[in-house]
Amino acid sequence: MTKRTNLLLGFSSFGIWAVFYQPEIIEAALALSFFVIVPIVLSTAVVSLPNWTGRYSVVFGWCGTLSMNMEARFLPLLLAGIWFFFTFILGWSGLRRLLARGIAPLEETAIDIGYLYLPVGGSWFVLAQGGATSLLPYSSVIVDLTAVHFHYAAFLLPVFTGLLGRWHYYNEGSNSMGGYQILTVGLLIGPLLTAAAVDQGPPLEAVLVGSYVFFLYWLAGWTIKAGLSMPPLAKGSLLLSSTVLIITMTLSILYSAGRAAGISFIEISGMIPWHGAWNAFVFSIFALIGWYAAFPAPRAVYNQFPISRLRGRSNIAERFTAKHLPEPGEGLLTVWQNYKREDFSPETLDRLVAAFYTQTARFGMEADITWEVPFLSPVSSFFTNKMKQINIPSSGPTAMSGTIYRLPEERDGRPEPHVWIRQNRSTEEPIFTAVYSRHTKKGVTYFNIALPLPAGVMTGVLRPVHGRNGTLILTSRKSLDKRGDEGIYITIGGWTWKTPLQEVFHVWEAGGGLEASHSLMVGPLRFLTIKYRLPLSGEPKHAGVERFSGE
Image (cartoon, rainbow, N blue to C red; front, side):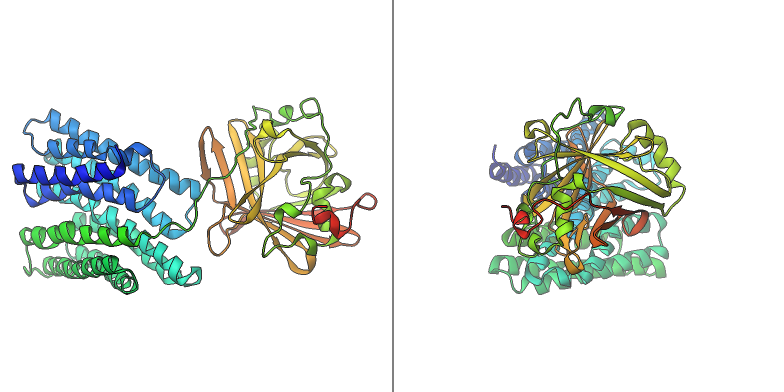
């Protein structure tokens, strides 16, 4: 079954069911979500999901819908559980996508958070169909409305916010995303504010709901502004949906303010048709039509780059010895020409800086280690000393020795892999075992550095950039457009996720040799700095520019 066929079956299934069953508003809203809303989002948001979710969602939609038509407890609970399983798969996929990419760019995170909210709605639906309201301090109407809330507002609004961010990036550029970031954060915590408001009641309810509604007004206004420059179908649909959102959110403010003041502006019985139904049947449908017509794509395809096949055991160093790596190498890369791009010219690097990477074995290495957070040193050593990998000594000077080997590409799976083993010169204890390679995406060639681990591999994806006066910086921080692969990743089995670690390596010429600084951070907080002195043994071979131009 194709996605289009699945979607057409969803529309027809909802129509047939609604005609024969004649549901109440809450039941109709949930069924519409099962049959129509969720499948359209799967086609509009364009995220990495199991292929069958977009092809057979109508089957799971029927399970959820039929569970509302049965009086017995066990079978409705089972069918509702099947729908929850479907929402769990979508939420799990959103979580994996978020962890694999990291929090940037924020518009993609908004879409992932929307997917994460969906199984919350699925779980509340199970509670409603399983008759658990007698065990909860809420009425059956509140439980049903909570299920609706997480199938609509909590799920759709982050997705719509993400789609708006995609459109804004392509039409306004990355320099204008500051206000969008504030809007997105407010909308992502909004469903939690609403849930807290329902639980706490007045007067806090009015404050929490009011805060959320402020961001919804902002979203509606921004969407109207964006829609004015879109094609006719997208423009009309988004203008209509945003206008409806403004009206229904005003009703929400009146309801919460009335409860806080003890004045009945509008009762819950009126909120269901005027707030809930209009949002479900008008705002949601027309917003989806508008964004489907506009169809803004993600900035880039994330987390799709080659990962080394190499894996370690309990002792990494034992896997990487001269016995296993018989072919010695000279440098970490063969030629610099592979890394040339519009804003990076290897020819302008200092002669020795460029030579360090093509003739690494000719340089010595004296390190001065500083743990900015002292207690991390013994904690790190407790684990790394056993596996002989990333085994960084405590603060102070350390002389290192290094050996480079060339590795067959079929063994590693990446182009021209070179193993660099660094040891403590005095104790011969292994410190780093790193396998250098590269990959290219969208015109940028990255250093792709693998550090084998006992159960997987850590991958550092670093982008080379120019420092001042011919110096070189390798950074794992993403560029301003947030389209690249930069980052520090962990791979276990077939699952790769991005860590919050960041590293920057800066190397420059000094006194006839080289000096370098290697900083490791968690986000903006630096916890380790290693300063290197890299003396040269003799003159570098092929030291002219032609060496670094690929000749």
